[in-house]
Picture 1: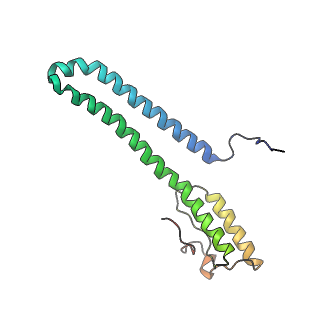
Picture 2: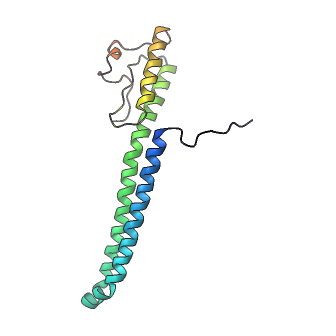
Picture 3: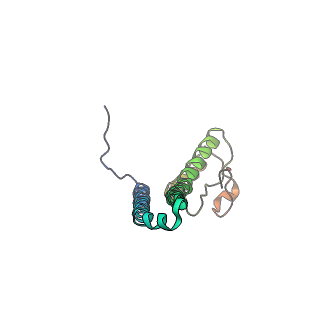
Length: 153
């Protein structure tokens, strides 16, 4: 029997991501339509002044639209690192636990998502250490020290 979700929004990250994507879409559409309006309203004037060189105006218009799109893609990739980086780190820690490696408490970058999950994960590590299931490095008691499991910067 398949269990249906009762909530549409499970985590605040979904809201943040949805709002960011909606903003990208709106800004991109505004940019495209603004350039279409500017291009159409100035095409005759540009062609009258530049003659055959007016094609450069169209190239400029297309270039601006493409550049804005590329900037959005660049920003979303950087944004995705804030979620994918922590997920990568969690995966590395789980593998280290299975392999019986000595661990330090997990530390994420200041702007990363999943900070609450990291705190809960560290609590689980402390409980597992008390039960003898994992070994935490002695410096792991102070979370200001470096993380024992390597991950992306």
